[in-house]
Image (cartoon, rainbow, N blue to C red):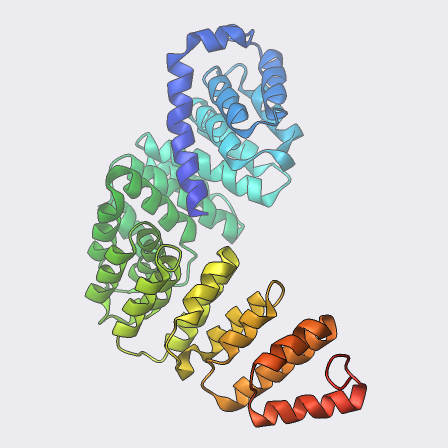
Length: 399
């Protein structure tokens, strides 16, 4: 979601540049400066069928610059015909242009679309455009005209984003604090973070979050800190770690280690682990290891194996060791068994070794037998395997 917000904002900048700076391109589209509604509908429909995403967005951005009060309906009809396959990045320039012409008509058009997700995207962009041009009250009034809570939250997110883009930060923050505790602020916060990042990087983001008052409610600060920490950790894990440490005394920062380490793992697993072990154990360390290790497994199983292999044996890493070991079985069962040997809980280790070896014996009995010939097993595991061999005559064990 956060990446889409950034892409959307950048697409508006690119679209404006292309629209105003390349009149030659407009000529090559075969349209006059003020095409009819029918001509614009045909051109937008054709652009929406362009299978090249970047080229499609560029074409749409240029066409958006041709929208007028007289022909805007043609562009909207083209969108409606292909609403299910129209991306958010494609919707943005068209709805922004329509909002400049007639905000109420643009918003009404978006609210009439069949797909809820597109209603939110279109309505949020109209609200963003209105607020960015200096009328946040009107943008918020658009949100208030909707009865579906999730749609309202999305449109408010657009309004807040535009408000911040217009150069205001204090008033949008106060507005967020005025909303009932429990309101879904994700879209609004994502928009603020994306805008601030484009303006001044992670420092701008951290400064804003640190400035959010914790009274009368800590809710906005808590939600903003968690989402912002993801942004910062993804771009500069060390800065994120230091920021967390400065906020560690607050309850809302308890999610910090998990966020920092999970993002850091993609940059430097060893450094992430060392930092986590240097922090006071808050009772969540085992879960943090598991979450972070799971992210590494999903992105790079080989790196996850190397990382897990060098973990110091400890009960708090037993769970993630088993998870990483599971991820290795398909390509190399011996790696699974190697990691399992590091499990500190003996009962869990023995169960894992037995289960993994039995699975290997079933799938590749010769390879499993060769491994068993080179390794000594705990007595309880060896005994269970021998008994299983007698019970079902597993090839390669008793033959």
